[in-house]
Image (tube, rainbow, N blue to C red; front, side, top):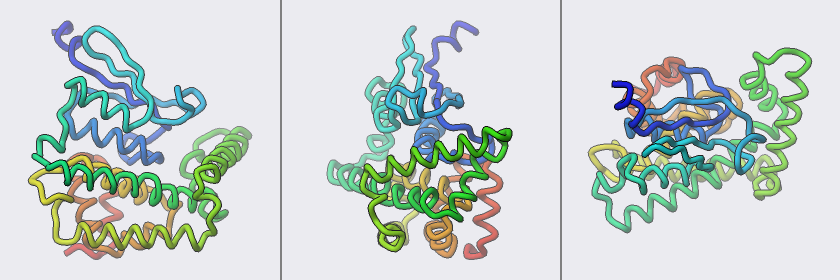
Length: 264
């Protein structure tokens, strides 16, 4: 029995610290865990910091299969490695998506990850009152005097990254206008659909959309975006459906969805 278990593929997802019953504070760590949970592959979550990661950012993964361990950084390349090596099934292939549908999914992925999520993260770390909440959520359990030092360091690091990527050069109003545009586009695209492509089960883009919705609703550090989503039955119903399917242990997230009072 032990030999059989040892031969099974296993993934160690290295990311920021997270509670066992709530989404990660990193959207990309949550994205990877969502794919792992949906695929059914054996996995565990390990705690690290970006400075220890191969590319200086999380997540990265140690993938154990066929008698070897391979370390892969970046959620996109981790998922691609798992699919290309037959360790998990490609949700898009299983759903029978056409090349055009896969292309649309890839475009939406880039929009969500590079524009929307960057704008949300900008709000968390650039706006002082949001930063105070974000820092409390992430570093609140850390002992004094390390807590303010580590918090300041991470804020400086994130602000620098967002500035270099371009999002930090926008004003608060401009950044939030990008969030509003993305919200309206996503709501229009998902309206009337259980899943993005009207498939019988989630495809890659559904998993990505869900991961970033769950991440952004699990914090009080991005109120502008969360307030829009919490008033929208289409996106809330989708988030509830996916949470119930994949992460029923996220009780606080499910409670926040119900507390919004917009689902019948």
